[in-house]
Image (spheres, rainbow, N blue to C red):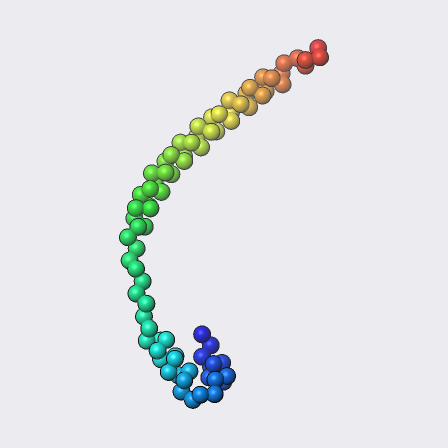
Length: 79
């Protein structure tokens, strides 16, 4: 908040200072983080599943590439 600008614009003396003191005195309590540890555990568990899926996918890709290479090595349909 640009308090200096408000002091220039607002003609009532002390009004901006009063608001600034009240604003600075206001402390909003921030809730405790109770969920992050659970999320971290789930993230680690899902990361192993993700890695396993990636490995299986890479294996499937290799198999499909072998099939494509085999099909390309066959004689064309016209012959």
